[in-house]
Amino acid sequence: MQRTRTAWLFLAPMLVAMLLVAGWPLARTLWFSVTDTNLNDLAAGRFVGWQNYFGAYGLFGNAGYTEGFWAGDWGISIANTFKFAVVSVLLETAIGLGVALLLNQEFRGRALVRTAVLVPWAIPTIVSAKMWGWMLNDQYGVVNQWLVDWGVVAQKIAFTAEPAYALWTVVAVDVWKTIPFMALLILAALQTLPRDIYEAARVDGVHPLRVFWRITLPLIRLPLMVAVVFRLLDALRVFDLIFVLTSNSSATISMSGFVRREMIDNGDLGFGSAAALSLTAIIFITAVLFLRAARVRLAEDTR
Image (tube, rainbow, N blue to C red):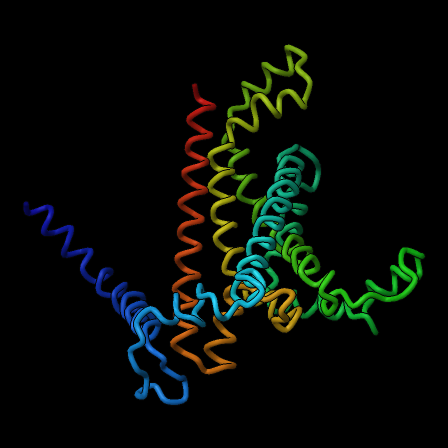
């Protein structure tokens, strides 16, 4: 009993801090989401219940989406976010795994190469987004100039402005920036693997690809899954990269961008709060489903 009291005593400051930092803003957001509060007059908000969620013109209502839910701005933002998250995480995981396998080999200057690989991840997102925005510009961008000089394209392309290219351009920039993060996490897992297994495989003459599929991948599967979960959760709340590169256009708007637009640009704090809570719920449900599916897969592989 005494140890329990002592534990709660030590935890009390942290719990109070969490309530102040996270609990109070969350409670306020929940309240605003069931009102029609406007940013210009917080005191004039009226209770409207679930209208911001399921009303005629709510997030998941019908009247606001004459061409279907996925044609509305909220539906488009959900689709854009998941397209961005799935494609970017898959590419980052695959390429990051390859980079980690290379960095795990013994070669001269390995420490220097490992440090250099981290440079894209070390650059702040806003800085890298502006840098790539200038490089991809259709008037003075060096990337477009190279493509024209090399005969790859006949005329310069507005990568961040044309709807057909904008989202995938953002994905490419995000992959460039985040590969080091995935490579570092996977490399940490590779460093913990026992060397005697690989020595035995080498002595037995096992092909390197077979060693990778039968030994390396199964042994790092759990750390790899953790890395994917962290990256997926981060990708689902993307905002800054898309906003800087494409100014939050309808072709690339994410769920976080939708929340920002409704709250700041339109001043609709109630509707924006409902979108913010819906975003949180969507990310939470996605994480739970992914972890459950991963747990089932891992359980099947251990049988």
